[in-house]
Length: 399
Ligand SMILES: [Ca+2]
Ligand SMILES: [Ca+2]
Image (cartoon, rainbow, N blue to C red; front, side, top):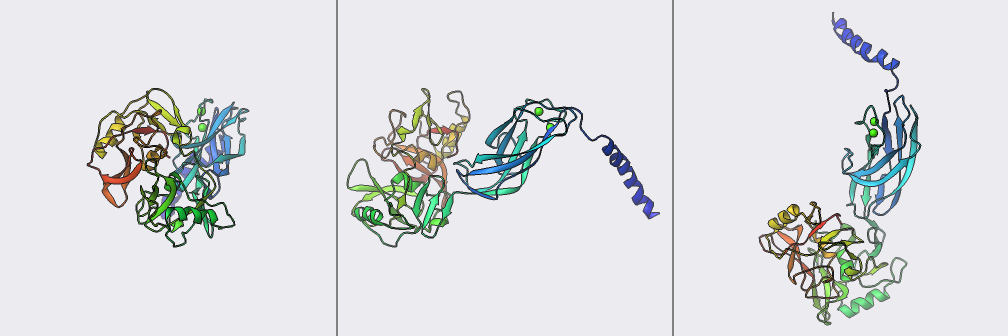
């Protein structure tokens, strides 16, 4: 009969679980796990947010002090290799069968790339408690947080990474360099009157090298053309730096030329001279206290193709570390010293050629080209990956 074929397997399944499960209601020993975790649906980099999570000891034995690791992750598989937000101590532990819900304030990391992320928690991440089940301690949030960088208003855009406020759209007028400065000084916009022409290092922070035409976030509505910076080049007072927002290159023009203007207020985000942030760690490495990047102080004197440059850094073992990599163009730009030239980098911190150095960033408009910095003058442009340039590796980050 058909009902017997359906009923009998159900009976066997129920005998195995329905009754046995009711008799044994706690795992033997200690067993910590995260039963839930959640956070806000949106947030900005550097914003302080609250994450709420419940930790339970579902064992029949009390658990002593432990630590919970809170993470943010691009997927819902949580591991200690994910980005750590905070470690939270539970010094009193949890009694057998006890659970506790906790809300912890965490800061969205300054260098987290905009996008969607899961929250994650790992109970007893420091392995202080011997448990009957160690494999069930990780939990990801059901919902993701959308992490953003730019906060747009009618006439202005706040960059939550640098805390600089930008004029959202230029006024459609090209000006010579002196008039560009005067225009920003007199500008009243968004209720503010403290506008100024941005420095070259500031203007470069809003370039997005993953796109071109224009190479900036859509929020700015940039023209694919040249915008003035306030920075005079170090070797000729008649020239000043510009950013070409078609693709993100940075070079200099005569100050009598006419280009567009995007003003900025607030900041500065960092000192103009990068050596004010750079700390010499040892003979081989220096650390940037703002970006937390650790730089190779001396290149090895070899020029390489772009592919060989990637391999050289990946294979490098220096200062006892093996996690070296070729820097992105945005990272490499952070050590340009625009106050000097030949070379345009701190010679107290770095041993450098006044020459071209590769970045890992492929040109968005042509996969055969990559970005580099010329450390003679400090300019940024693209060139074929088959070219031979110097290499300076980095670890940590990303920035
Ligand atoms: Ca466990
Ligand atoms: Ca454990």
